[in-house]
Length: 194
Image 1 (cartoon, rainbow, N blue to C red):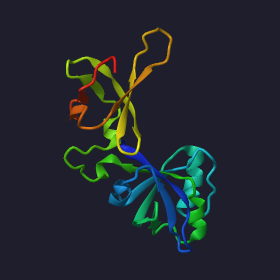
Image 2 (tube, rainbow, N blue to C red):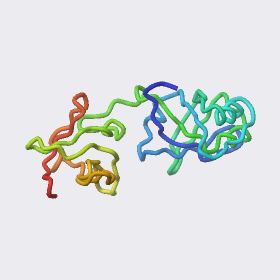
Image 3 (tube, one colour):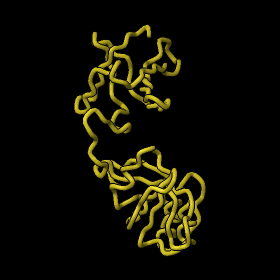
């Protein structure tokens, strides 16, 4: 598996009788699934049954924790999911055997983000500072609240032995001054007591 592999979805089920399968993407905009023709599969936490070709490999991978490369012939939007097919998955039985598999693609295959657009995965781990240079925490997660995204920061607990505290900051231009991906830093208009 590539060193920059990112989990982008899961195979939900077979779709049709010709080997197509339904994918539940982790993003509302699944461009990463469309841009990569090489998906790396790992079994879900539960046992994924084996059949032929990549299905057998996936079942074996569950025991060895080795990824299986699946070369994608076509992937497209379908309602609220994505459907895809591979030359290596010939029929519905093989597609059903992939159910539950986790899909990873290389980060390097993601489409280039536009100006002031960021992939969530690129924001994780960035340090957040306010305009005065005070450290507010590190991005541990992002949360979509519908109209906006919220940065979920982790900061050391004030009391020894306690779990890290959390701080949430809306990821909107009114509060975010600058995102410096190479410098791994976000500057915000936010105070410690907010």
